[in-house]
Length: 345
Image (cartoon, rainbow, N blue to C red; front, side, top):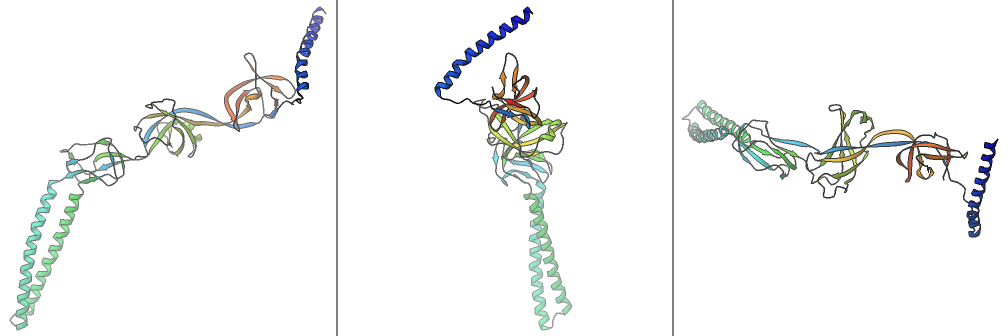
């Protein structure tokens, strides 16, 4: 009985204090002529949220090609080095096969001999025609002279074709850049032996991408066209200067060592080193969650509270910061469920 009486007295006292404290606020509202505002309501619903993850991506060229030798020989000249920019089709090296030069000289001598034989056969044919006109030569001799000239002409055409093939083989010693870009590696030095099909230089296109490698559990969340946030490069003068937003261009359909590989495009990679690492934030998961505006959270002493429409205060466990139509919000991990109506403080 004594305890009940004490609690009643304390409650009355507290109520009196609250009424006295509230009276000046109410009087101030009446004096200013301001209407009282009803508490703002928010209906709790489940929304799709994205969990973001920071990973390191590597700057890679969109495509790398090798400038290969087409014949076997000695590397006579090499006009590029690592880091040089080259245009498509420019000659970067020459492979020399000494045997081809000897074959060309032999074919040239053969063509000169055939040309002499052709002149001799033409003279013989002309004399035979004159003798045939006077009846001093037979038709068979005339036919033999004409056939001899035709044979020499055919041999000349064959020798010229053979020389053209040999000359083309010699021209194949020129190594051209298959595409425009930057030379990443040069293999070989002048004077070294190069085999047919061997790479002389590796050229990367001047278009770079960020290559991401993620655990395979993230494979189902990566889609071409998804936006990514790219941080600053490691060699930047201002580490806080982010590159901005990028877009996933391609998700490779094959896992590499248990990882999913994707390429992201972002502006400003022109002066990066191939292989340089950059921090990238991607969407690692999409799931359903309860998100409420931050203004509906009561910050208590060591606990976060939410007032229901019934007036009850319930403790909640808050999670990562979110947004609802541009309004700062917070994810609720426990304490609320879809359909609950909460009031603003």
